[in-house]
Image 1 (cartoon, rainbow, N blue to C red):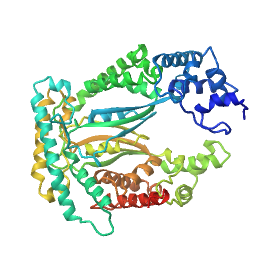
Image 2 (image 1 turned 90 degrees about the horizontal axis):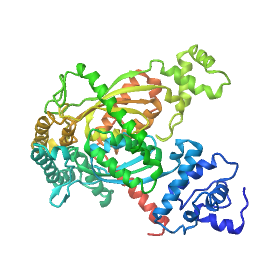
Image 3 (image 1 turned 180 degrees about the vertical axis):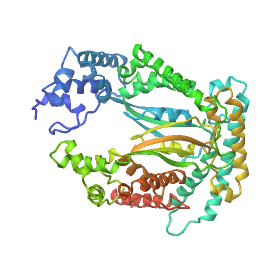
Length: 552
């Protein structure tokens, strides 16, 4: 451990969480300085505290003395201070030439009043970014602003002959959604009255979630929502480059607005999105999309917004589901080999030969050792289970897709959102007697889409309600399957993605029963009041916290 004088300690203490232990966090430092500090630290024999003190705080050469000697309580950095930090970072980058420095500093950014369509494009970027999106399950989307429902009025459509049709269709969907909230809530409460063991808070929250679950399918994809993002500089730069290259005006506008705000806090990390290499990458993205679309056009049997030949679900529910289209028939061998590798001092080829000579029972013993004694779903098998992959072709409603899309340790791509795969009407809508209202909103959207898509197939997606089905594929390894399928089949989950998760598990179990046998926390049952037990658990936790902090 380094020794510091009392004066050195006084200087350093505002910027580290402790002065006398080998593990500590950084505080009160500009993001650019953090990135440069770690970069310099990786090529120094000094400790991080010593590098910060000698080469950043006390160095005239760094140009950062003013920045770091400023009171750490000073929340807002002046433009001069930010510029000096940026200049220093660029000198570090020139010296080391390593773009990964940009992964050592990050930013939080709020992205509000964007469409649900836009959130999927933003969340397609998986590595280095952590998004959080406003929930359609716990929040009603029934407010107006200045007398207008809150949905994205896409500039291309609003400047076209379809502007009135677009607004009328979205307005009708929102009005139907809002009108049905009290009616469906009443239906739920009559069917599932509160008992004495359930608190009013837990019951109200469960009714609200169930109402949202039933009605979210009426919301059009244009619905305005909010997002929060935390990410590192390198990931943000790549995301901005993709947004600038997008065909949709909303994405380009979001990219421009994000760039302007991120440039205020991590300017050096995002500047290249609009410079030489960023512009070249944007051109590459556009050309690649065009070339692939051209290559597939002669096989697709459809163009633009026309209805694809053979697509199903005309006007009604299309269960779709998940179809296993590809898997590794040698998965058991691969997992056994990978599981044994760390424990056998032999090259991989020899271990492969040993496993190949094993009996079925011997392989199952090795696999069983990887998944035995799991006490809850958070206890997942090790990396050996990353050697088995599955690809599913999935057809589910757009609301369900939004939930499954959140999983990032996999590969997935979607097709355009259209009305031609049908929609799913919640059974409670029919049971409560409001199927006519629901169907009317769906039919209006389908008709509007048919008119708009002839000219603007991508922009026409905005008018489609979340109940309509979309097709996408998912490729993931078995380790991710344990996490995703057990989580998404749990009791409190939405019925739409629970059914997808249950189907995926069944398909994996058919082809690899020994590998699926460890998924003992799959819930294959159906429930009428999904969130109730989860809300009761929240009640218990709130009581424990109240006792802990003396509030009872």
